[in-house]
Length: 614
Figure 1 (tube, rainbow, N blue to C red):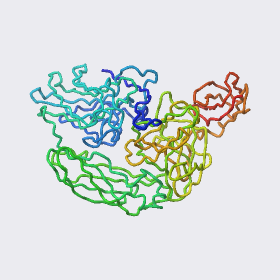
Figure 2: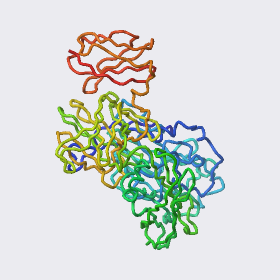
Figure 3: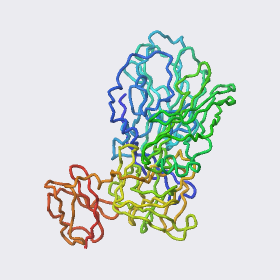
Figure 4: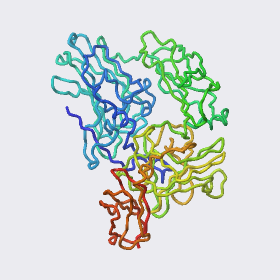
């Protein structure tokens, strides 16, 4: 069976109580797996046939399935899209391909096969139906993603000669917990040296996220339909951050108020999947990653009841001073939790989990991965604003914002926005009016594949922010259309989201759970990934007159052909074409009003400039 990967269009899917202006939507983009796909994927090739028992719980930290067990790389291995997994890590099948992007941007009403997860060859030639081979797995629709619709389905296929035979399927639903499935392998045609099984999700394209999580796959002989017990004690989550609010911050800001920033207890979750209670011995060790210096360690034990219950284990946060270079250096603490005495038959791969605490040149509340998109329902005549509250422990220099944009249809590449840095918001924290520290206009959304997968928008002039609270704001102008830009939403954030929105000329505290992925970047000079900063000096350009009536003259120093694009205030493209140096653009056919023009040199876009058509 040839698997076709699908595209999904994104309209508003969910409106909860009180969400009149705020909405969430499925992800249309996964830069994490797109970045991983740039690596050599030739490693996904046929290996020596596997033997029983087969076991997989997706505990590895790679975003693709283990190539010693799986031949394709469309599933997304993660620990953020799931809710209460059997063990840490799941494989997520959704409506995005192995590059993290849609395949087809035109059709959204068809039903199509999407992601697949296919095993390497498994040698069953020495077995017969009398050996009672069963395949079991756990699955979860939705999780932290959007639920698949009832027309969607998750399917399991067995390789039958040259064909694939569907042996199980389940339709989309809102059932949240993981459920276990038992499938016998009994047909004599399966008992050869090239047996395979494959999971596939089918998406009915009615704006569905079609998210399915798969966990804890087991296949072995000597089983039966009632062999459902999972004899394993395992971690189900990553350790918490050692910071009590931020997920990342500059190290100098941390040192300025170390006691105020540290959480009192680090914690993690351990699941006892045995039927009987177990006393679990566990420990942790923390190191400064670059030097290996031990920062803290500890051991403990806890009694965990049976029946698949989960216990929180914790340790006091370590306070050891850490060697560091300059005040602007990146510092990483590796926090490793481990089980000391798991059960005698436990798989060992899920007995350790690691979380790196990063101190870098930005402030964040998110963990770097988005599970949904966040957007606003904009007023027709007023600007729309999203502001995130941050605090500084000492004065610092703000260089710009790193923003994770969610993909939307149509793409928002022509939607302009402004960056505003506020010291106060009217009606928030006792303030009577907005206090603007810096505003810069004429940015456009982009989708970055750079480190951290954020797009960095640099301020032309950095702004020094005093100690205390400030707000980082993305603003779309009036007449921008009914829906705003889409922002990445980290729904694993369970503390306050520190977010405010303004679509009716007043600030309202956000009711959406999660962190909207906008990060202030502080400290030393950084080259932005915003379009204006990517041009060489000889690619800078000017245009005149402004206002203009019939002719717009474009002047740039490089003697080469460039591409231009003109968009209106709503972000819709109204003109485009190619021009040479010192060539005029006839704009007589344009209606009177405000427009933006952007030039692209060798595929790299320059900063947009505003002009008025008289």
